Amino acid sequence: MDIQLVSALISGLGMGSMYGLMALGFYITYAVSGTINFAQGSSMMLGAVLCFTFSQTLQWPLVPAVAMALLCCALYGLVVEFLAVRPFTRRGSDAWLMSTVALGIVLDNLVMHTFGREPRSLPSSLAITPLEVAGVNLAVYPLQLIIPVVGLSLALVLHWVARHTRWGTALLATEQNKDAARLMGIPIGRAIAGAFALSTLLAGVAGMLIAPLANVNSDMGTLFGLKAFSVAILGGITSPWGVVMAGLLFGVAESLITVTLGSGYTHIITFALVIVALALRPNGLFGRAAVKKV
Image (cartoon, rainbow, N blue to C red; front, top):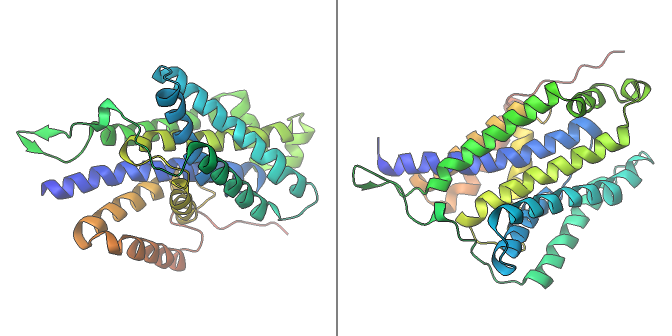
């Protein structure tokens, strides 16, 4: 197999894992609350910027820097739910659609004025020397092999938590029937807030993993957020494994198009393929049509 093609497949799986993680965040909030955090791209940017700030600017060791960055991302998710979602859902309004977008723009601009406009590089020993096989440079960094493993491992952990812990059971119950869950004593408000915290935490993980391979800046999450939302819809936003698989497919397709046709065609063709796929399967590749009992 051509080395360039192998490199494209590996890097595509890495990027696809990032899209899948962020799309999984869209699934979690939609399943539990029926709402979507359109500031998810900003959450990804926040994870990368905070990791850079703690590890490079403040010179913290990597593990505490990552842990604090993830904690801040989770807290940001609670803020999004409390300020931009809860006040509107209580009144039966869909204004959270715009308020989450607005809150993401506010965060992007706050980071721009504090962190600066200049892109920065987050160094990593896993993104310095490309891998070689039999003396042939694969043009792939070790981090690009680790990213899909981390992404799929996190998806498996979430699946286990949902099936084998009380908090996961509470989220599943809230997803299936909020009124019944409330009658069983499950705190719906806290379950929804926890879902938003988990959603932004996943986006923060994606931001930190991709940061050594891309520049860290205040608007890095905009396009990532748009692609992740496309992936969530493409996979079927009601199917957790569907959005993960759609993320991998999107990433590989994007990478292969870039290698074969050039980067100028990447977004044109990938988003055109998304439109065609949704035209053929309106509920997503792995989603199911909702069944309503009357």
